[in-house]
Structure formats: structure tokens, C-alpha cells
Length: 490
Image 1: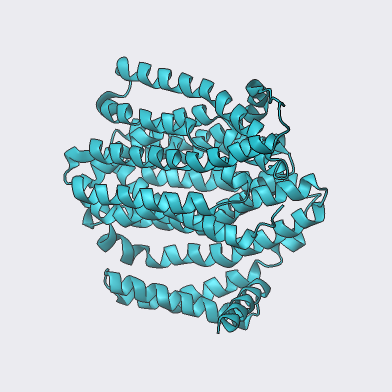
Image 2 (image 1 turned 135 degrees about the horizontal axis):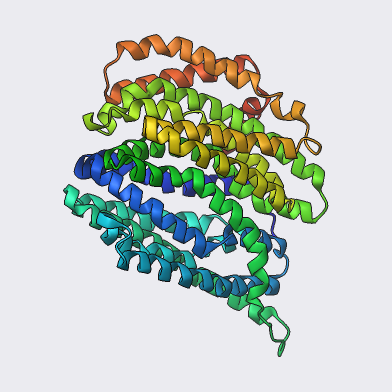
């Protein structure tokens, strides 16, 4: 088997994950002004509802199928069998999701956003056609990245051309849904070509007997944490809309979260790459290699996540007014409150997706996620009632912290806390110094794109200098490798 580059796959997957968040941010200054907070809020509420149905349609097949495909990297015939079994099995929950969503539309459950829910049926169909797991399981991230870049750029072009007023929220919804389904369809020719090669390599006359229902129970075990995750990533938006009856509150929350999630992607993208890598190492019995990967990943989270979180606190007041518009000043303190999630979710991503899932500790992963979901559900209702969008952010912070703490408890015997947290103090100190140096400057500057870029440049420079003075091992390693590559190019 050809050796796959984790670093190259990280770059591909990082590009793909950033694209999912970055393009909405590129359009945010335009969309936020065209649709206004109420229009953005209506879309956010509708999207939160449809997410429950896309979760039902996908069950737990995302991570499960990726892991199964990775397990059979050396056997194309077995990969083809798993692929078709997963596709066929997923048709059952997809059909159930479509029927249930359209029934709720028919009885008037969604109220004014019912037309948007009709267009979002496309998202449910797109879930059935999603085969990204096949390429991720084979540690091939290039095709998915390039195709998504091309299709999503077309979608962005459509938004700028056709979305003009708050009444165009239906068109904004339709364009986003079409981008999703076209991106998924575009991957099929590549997968079919590979599967046909696998069929030709199989012994002549040998038939593959498909048993799609054998994957139902294993995927359901990962479906439970998927549902639980939605309780504190999507339920907050649903409850903001239902409890406050104020679409603008959802708009403020949506835009602040969107910006923070872009940076979070830089930290968490490594997790998707490491699932197939660690799954394979675990299948081969190389548990020490899995542990080494986890320690490097936590160091990576601290090295990038802590300064990113500090950076959001620093630039929020300067960024929001010119980026989203004067109507979104409420998003400034929401963005600052969201900032710690970059590190908290980064760590749970490492312990959950890079260790518990590849090592087939699905029950522990599920229990961790459920603990956060229950915490979030209990806190969301009273906090949103009294503090609106601010309460939803507080509930998210506490629940994500609970998830990470429970995962740490579960891995305490297999992983060394000294190895995990030994790399924490240098990024923490460097980020603190960055805030001390740049905060006085932030108070003197008025909101503008140039001043925000100046703040970012100063923050990056101060953090970079301090982290090198402290001789952080991972920073030095990355710098040396970059320098070596530049020398070879010369």
C-alpha cells in the first residue's frame, strides 16, 4: 500500500474544513447587511431544525464508515463491499427523515419558516449521497478539497449575484442547499471508477454478498453521540428562537459563532486526518504510535488554540462593527465569550476522535458526549430565558468543558497527564504577554479593516517571538522543517 502523508492530508483537510466555515464568513459582511439580523436568524433557526433530520439520515455512519474503510485499505474488494452496504443501509433513515420533515411542514409546525424547511429537504437527500467517508478512510483528501472549493465558489458567486434583500432569505437557503448536494454528487464518478477497479481485481466468477443491515447497530452506537453533540451545537439555536421569539438574537449568535468556528477549524482539522491513521495503527497493535500521535495533537491544540482564543478577545470590538455592520454590536461580547471553545473543543476532538473512536472505545465516547448534552439541556433553558443569546454561549462553554473533563477521566490510565499538559504553560504565557502588549493598542484604534489587520499582525508577532524565546519544541520543529524545505527548493 502506498504510504499516505498525514501532513499533506492535514493540509488538504484543513483547507476543506476551513472552506466550510470560511466561505460563509467571506459572504457574512454582505449577507448580514442584505438579510439583516432577523433574516439571518430565520435561516439559523431553520438550519438548526433540519440538522436534526440530517443527523437522523446519516445515523453514525460518518465516523463509523470512515473507520471501516480505513481498516480495509489493503483490500479493495472488502472496501467496495463496505461502501455499498453503508450506502444501502443509509437509505432507510434518509427516507424516514424526509417523511417526518414533510409531515411537520404539512401540519404547520414550523410557522413562518416552513418554506425554508421545504428547500432544506435537499440537505437530507444530500446526506444520502455523501461519500466523503470513502476518501477519508483511504486517507485521500485531495479530491474532496478541490471539488468543494470549485462548487462552493460557484455558490458564493450566486449569493452575491442574487441575494439582495431580506425577502431573499429563501434564495440564500436554496443556494446553500444546492452547493451541498452538487459537492456530494461530484465525488461519485471518482468513487465508481475506483470501485470498478476493485471488481476487476476480484477472482472471476466470485460474487460479493451484501449485508447492509449488519452496519445498522454499530453505526447506531455512534449515532447517539452525534445526537448528543447536536444538543449543544444546534439545540442552542433552536431554543434561542423558541424561547426568545426574537430572530435577531439568533442572528447575533449565529454570526459570532461562525467567526469563532473558522479559527476552531484550524485546530480541529487534524482530528479528521488522524482518525484513519490511528485506526490503522490500533488495528496493527501499535498502541504506542497512537499515544505519540495524541500527545503531539494536544501540543498542537495548545500551540495554536490558546493564541487564537486570546486573539478573539483582543480583536472582537474592532472587527464586528466594520465586518458585520452596526446592527451586530451585540455579537462583540458573544464572540469574546465563545473564544475559549477553540481550546476546549480542540482537546475533546483529540481525546474523542483521535483516541476513543480509533481505539473502538465507542461507549466511553458516547458517555462523554451524553454528559455534555445533558449539562447543556439543563442549563440552556433557564440561561436563555434570563440572558438570551448570552445564556446560550455560557451553557455551551460549561457543557463542552464537561465533555473534555469526562474524556480526560476515561483516558487517565492509558495516557499521561504530564505528557498532555506539559506543553501548556509556554503557549499560555506567550498568549498572556501578547494580550498585555496589544490591549493598549486596541483601545486606541477605531474599528476598520486596517486597524484589525494591524492588531492581528502585532499579536502574531509578539506571540511568535515569545514562543520562540521560550523554545517551544513543536514550534521549533515546525520552523526547522519549514526552513529545510525552503533550502531544498533553493
